[in-house]
Length: 211
Length: 211
Image (tube, rainbow over all chains, first blue to last red; front, side):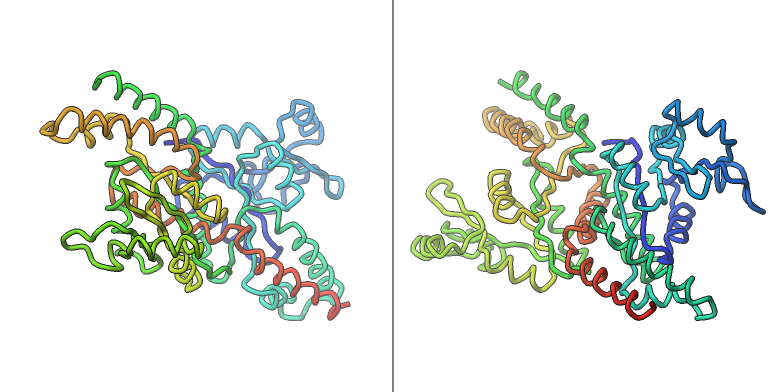
């Protein structure tokens, strides 16, 4: 059957544990490759070229834009962030399922360019749990907390754009469920048109030989 | 999230091992219930009411037809065969994923009535393997073999109506894959609209309390 990797977009509420889920998915299974973004912002202490980001100058980034080298890109606070197309396509061709952890606007741009992309949204078990995670220990300034909660409410509006919702209650369970959803996707009939046609074609020979 | 069972239609080529797969799925996992057909044909030796079939008189069956008590029914060689609706709906309400092993015409009737039904088609690893299974040890009359092969070619035409294709090469692997596909389906966003709306609704309270 289909050996091509699946481009998988993982989004979810801030504070829901997306990063931890993705990290565990990549360490638990060999099937995955993480898409690494390019950015023009300066590396922070401990960040490594090609691990956290591909670090680019503004000129390099803009020349990649004109070369259509990004699946999607955006500008935040004077810096560019983008998803280089070449890396994603190379890994998919190798048969790796490529994981893209990205917020909703970026996710929708990707879905527009790769209609076959699989989209997952990670949710908390309940609003209260999310609130607790966003509020933290209550040691942070009120306005920081308020803006986090405001952002979560905004993020909720995008949920229905995703094909699958996965609850992050227990990390191990959640990672297994995400893995199972992505692997099941390989069996979609629409991803195995060639296999299906070869099978039907091969079976037509049944009639000639036996009549 | 959604606790309602999923109606799962399993079809596939004759001789591909559907029956064995379904039997193992039901014995390996508690999550499933098998839909049992009703028929007007006489029980054969060893068949048990409510296990192989619900045995009905012609009058009983026809009165069920007028009561719209079947999801689908058909007549073969003077006997009726049908899928009673009540049993399927009861099991789904209990949270069981209901398995319906049925040929393509029946499957399409079910999909028309239950658009949410999940459809799987079991395929052989290759045309040659199927041919081998259908030809058997070569001890059967040529015309029996020929009509089996003819039927397989007909069945192939329906493959593209199914959402998932699963190869039955190794039985254990195949059953695990079928299980994983059905369980992943529970996370479909479209099957969790209530959960999604409750979450979004609950989060709106974030704003009032903290501003």
